[in-house]
Image (cartoon, rainbow, N blue to C red; front, side, top):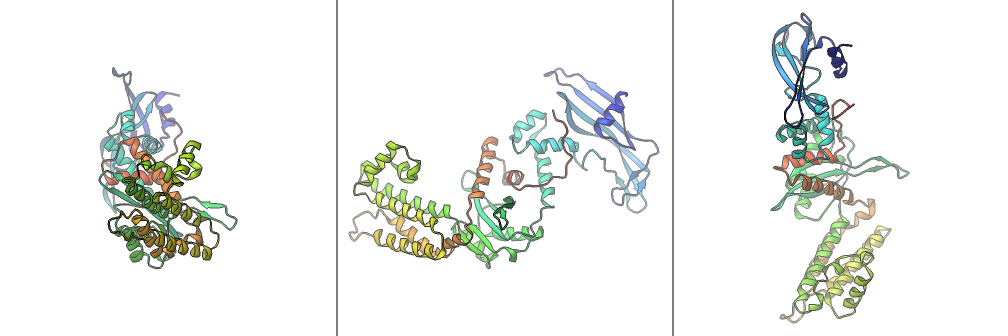
Length: 433
């Protein structure tokens, strides 16, 4: 078999296309050279019209070059005379070559290689590895992510989990809408969790943007019966306006986060008068099972003293026991009693000069009492944002590897790439460098 036939077989080139020449230029830098594989169509051959696929004669040609997978360590390019055909119905149009998508400077196999590596390697590192500018590679990734999202089916979405994750410093966030995993009657997973929609910001308008995107992908907002989220005013307003019929569940982890913040605020206020609280923050905010024996001993010593921080700590531990209730009615009774107890114990001191150490805990109890319906919805389906927190971890890990992203679009693209379970219309890789 001669060299051209060998490369035709390797590239999968079929009539009317054929390999007509191989050119290799040895490289002086790093021993890397350049391999050009020249292709051409058969003289007199007919090519399909891009619109109607009717065979047409070539009208004229224009030479184009596409970056291909490396041949060993050498950069490889496909070079071809790309014809325009004259169709009786659609006029003069440029034909689509089988090895690359229209407008791309890369072959489909090269793009498939980039898409396989992009979730694992920072784009700047990947760009250096293949000798291309990262802007060109981002165009490839964004094209295929956007293309794959056009085929996403949301027709059966009935519940969503909503959260935000930090995009950059200075309070820059993106909001994520995720479909939790689905279970059958036996408790077996029928479909894994997936990110449905990501948008810049964390205002109430993100919910309307999600509803619009849901409709674009065959879903119906009226089919969404459950929403799990935190108690931020923006999310509450967004859910009330865009999904007023959905049952809202306030995430248990965010509920406990509010109580932990209130506990830490009590520690900070009391620390001014009680120096023994110095360097004890970790002890109060950790679960007892996560403490070492020496840390537990120190915590026991502090708890035995007449500290209001210790009282706030007991409030947090008691609320944590709420999630062990099995029946919604018992959970409702437990939460109501907890709120009444905290409001009674943490009320404002009678002496105006005395520091209100437990003010944040009192305020938190009022918040939980006012939002108890959403908190108690947890006991119906036991929905949490745990799965979206894992997505946040993946997104932040990718952001840390890349040392940040230039804009929101690139960060959103990366989240879709790593957490949306997209199906890309690309050839399977059979080899790579």
